[in-house]
Length: 160
Figure (cartoon, one colour):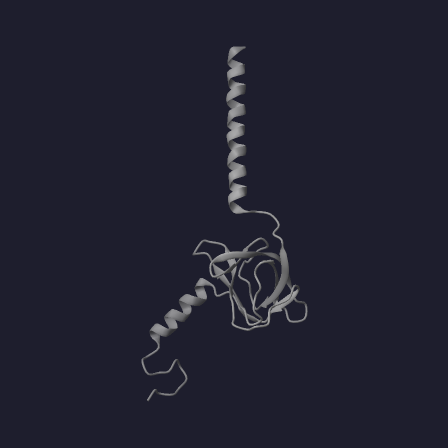
């Protein structure tokens, strides 16, 4: 009988420790809904960006991706972001999809412009840059490395 009580107490302690780890993980990740205003942007491709991904401005999280869908007319990816209320984006803000590293997830990087006018709630970011995969970047590096000097990148014109 004594053995069953000890096993039960140890099991309860293990469950409490596991619950503590789950709480810390959720608190650190800041998973949940964020208060803010919606802004949309259209991209040629989003490269695996998912709902819940970060939206960052100068490396600081200022929102989250709340929806991704396909525009049935243009077949572009439409990304709806929820931006914090205390962040007011200029109209000439540029949105790009970036990778957090080779194996990391994707996020939306915002680069604020200098326009006086601001994007209103429900507004749209017009200037976007699509996701560039690692394969695209390696191909570009190989192309640049194999292009003879003075070729001008294959334009057929020699540089002066």
